[in-house]
Amino acid sequence: KNEVEQSPQNLTAQEGEFITINCSYSVGISALHWLQQHPGGGIVSLFMLSSGKKKHGRLIATINIQEKHSSLHITASHPRDSAVYICAASFPSGAGSYQLTFGKGTKLSVIP
Amino acid sequence: NAGVTQTPKFQVLKTGQSMTLQCAQDMNHNSMYWYRQDPGMGLRLIYYSASEGTTDKGEVPNGYNVSRLNKREFSLRLESAAPSQTSVYFCASRVGGSNYGYTFGSGTRLTVV
Image (cartoon, rainbow over all chains, first blue to last red):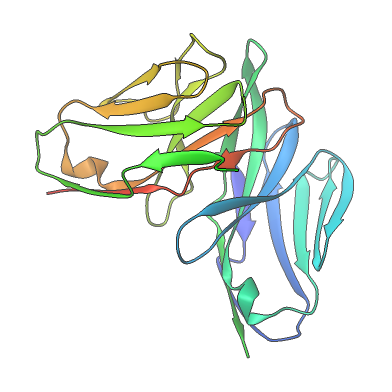
């Protein structure tokens, strides 16, 4: 069964801190997605990666295929980064299509 | 650039009532998906459509039906709503293939009383 585990479940940080959210998955995947869900509920795709590292502004995502592990880092955190961060693994589901299995999310609160 | 548009945003139903959640995308994406999000659980796939004219069951399809009306539109129907279907529903789309990201709608918060 495809499983995705995230840690921690909840995270409180002071503004300016470096933040790491971890994600591990159980079997081989085609890609790993990081998503952001703000308190208003909308979901935004942050990164999709299948190897190595990607950076966008203060956000960095890394993946280690051998260890089946990915991390999302936020540098110089800010209260506007407060959101739920969701890891999702893309698995082939046959006939050229793919499905996502989602972690339960990490709720991040950044305090001024 | 509307992206993925879901309607309605909120809905309250009585047990046994039916309704259709609408989803439309304007990005010419091939694949479309319906998910539900419940407290303490990750998003779960209800149904998906890999391309126009095809639909397949996901992890939690019971109590739902879908229609891929055309390439743009993918609707989710609850024929006889139950309290267990109280949830937030998200539609998503993607170009197709493993190397492309997903675009999500803003969600529909459904309460069945």
